[in-house]
Length: 240
Image 1 (cartoon, rainbow, N blue to C red):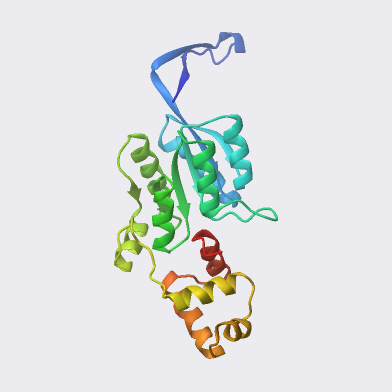
Image 2 (cartoon, rainbow, N blue to C red; image 1 turned 45 degrees about the vertical axis):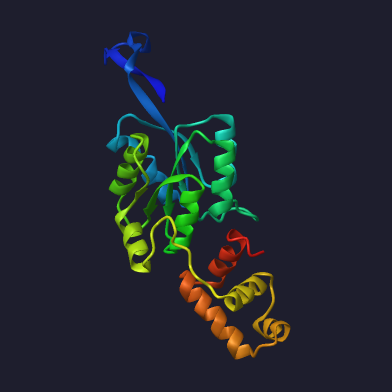
């Protein structure tokens, strides 16, 4: 936390020299770095001090690379970061970014924003040190609540939408890992490596229809809505 100057005297009709500041040790700011690749979300996050006066936005970043650079130059108390950011040729986001944050800013507490609905991602994020997870389907009040919760040193926090997703999956937030069969894992790994379904079928000695079904089943279990999400899972889970 950082000390904040408080205004003790202000002559609205005087010059700047009429402003007298002093430091009040009883007031301290929680410095925050925010990162999201959508300008409208950044603008919303910049208003966090309106709900919590002792919050100070120190860094506004639109990429994972920008966030890491900012934290390397100037540490903060709290990081509010989007899980998926796609700026740049090789965007730094997802679990790769969370691992980097843990290395670069180990003392900063992390609140993760996400549109993900995959419990395995939530579990992995918590294992990497994330203290709170808020769905982008929740209101801004949930972000404020999560930040307060984390700064108060309480246990992990998940927003109502995130909790509902975990409960519907029948798993705990800590151990919500999908159970893919070995055959499904083989298909996912090869698909992520760039093999076509026909090539996978030939390589594994299965029919194309069987491989297609196994890919579909894996995506359903992982709640991966797109091929990109499936490939991301393969990378982040260490399949490739």
